Image (cartoon, rainbow, N blue to C red; front, side):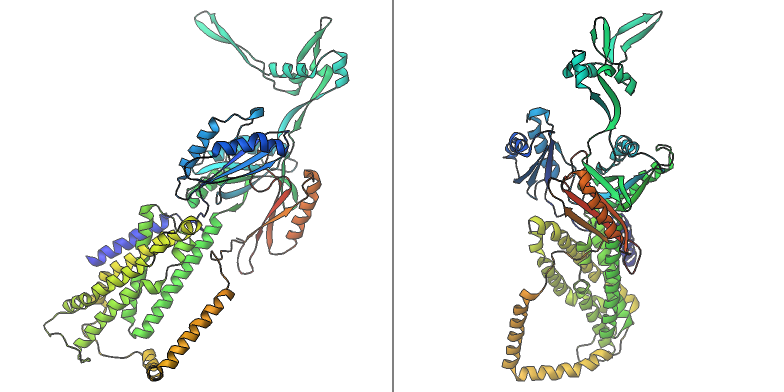
Length: 620
């Protein structure tokens, strides 16, 4: 029954491992809301005075508020509101929205919350069309089809579009003709606005039917714009085409995206909602992309071509953790076998490792926690098996003494093997329990950490605690049961080869150390002092290295350079980076998105993302 329960728990741990949310690294960012406000035509000073400062004043005094930082640019205001780590993100978001709802800004400026987050970007794609397909059409598909489609995916908060041309209707007014026909520019604007309306009326009874009467006035083509009546002169109507010329154009560009040899492409960046599970969200995105590419939703020859998703990084993390786990178990088994000198005992000790790990995984899954490189990869197998080693060694000793190879009191021949195992376990149960409790108590400071340290190391401490509890359960249940099956009734005393060779060396060193006690203590103090002296020279890393295979390069251009003038330099950067054989693709972003939501790349910056091919494997 005990073995059946153990196998059931192992199966539950395996199921929980496949369902466990795995992230590459914990989210170190505090709850933060970024308020973006666009006000075209205003200088940075006016944006600061009339938009940024009123928003900062409105945000003051909120519960949990720590910092308010802002950037004011030409036509753009960015205010970052940061809360304490113990503040719930959605509570903070609601507080910000409540304050913004009562704020009145000049020029009908409307602030909104940016969907950007520290680890929110999970998927990137390029919208590709057949040869000759216009950027305006690709941009239209991105804004009116794909963006809306991706936002309906559970876990996706927004899609940021880069590149392309936004379609607009332009009216080029001739000032001389306005004077000739005695027409003003406000009249032209008002006439265009009034002519682009549908007017509703009452109903009209036709026999037994009732029909709704509507006046259709929505503009559908350039000819409709040219035919708008502005005024009349001597009984003759003055049309818009008499004083102006309507044409199809595009909006002023704020950013340009390029990839490899294509200087102008249309790309999309899918942003994940804060707190969502990355792998599940990416699976839904990939399923949606596959469905869109196979359907008739896109025009013929147009398809979505992804070139980055976070799951590759998570795969690298998972493979790294699994590699470390397998290597650690094998190494621990070899060490146990060398010092125990008994293959069965080494197997019993090693069996507690997967039980402890799957127990920790099951608890994490039930609590809704996520695993990452720090929380799982930092587990020390030596500490996990300490209790099991003590238990198995004591059982092994009692079975060996039953064979008559020890001067310690032997058990009665009438005592069964199970009774001897029970007595062996009860001899060390309290010591094992309290030693494990002391180790768990050593992690209490990690639970009390605040800020970035708490966000990063608290999950590791919890996972470590779960694994130690699982190891303790395995020590009191799995180890004795496996010992009753795998170990023979009696064991002959046989010292293993490695301890037998090391023991004379150890005894010699021990005798000399006890004979020269002051020298031994002095050497220990000197070694400690030398170690302390080397600490300032030791390199330090706050996080373990995790190579994704991508590089993020940022170049800052002169503040006054135009978008068109900076594009040749960006193209030269892409070409220079593509000249390296390890590089698989280079994607550049010059300027900022058309909606102004980008937090980093403003109009004087360029960002380039490289995917490289490692020398020992496929591109990652």
